[in-house]
Image 1 (cartoon, rainbow, N blue to C red):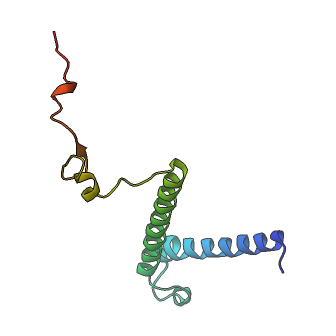
Image 2: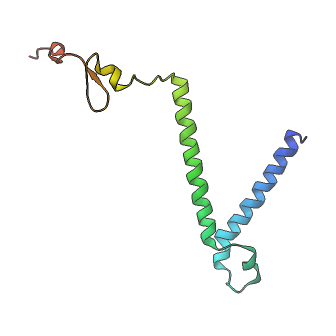
Image 3: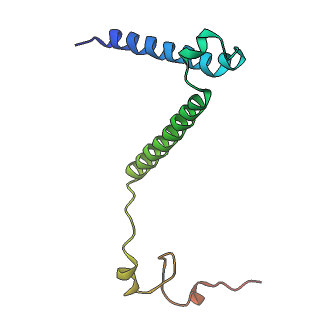
Length: 111
């Protein structure tokens, strides 16, 4: 089994190599002549941009999901009862809010 330090060093080296390769691929190779021998080491730039878009979209989606689930679990959110159960005790509008009474009893005189 690898130690944490060895695993961390391996991951850091891998990420550094990938970062350098990506920067060369997207940032430098567009300025190198198409017939240069180094062009065969890199895929077309469109794939690099697609890779960046997919990684960012996935990261944002996972981040939003984790953040939402964390908020739900931390606040102890309990979903409201279904609209059918609430309809027996009052009037339910389109979004599932139960209204009891006309609401006139809560009005205060102004003036």
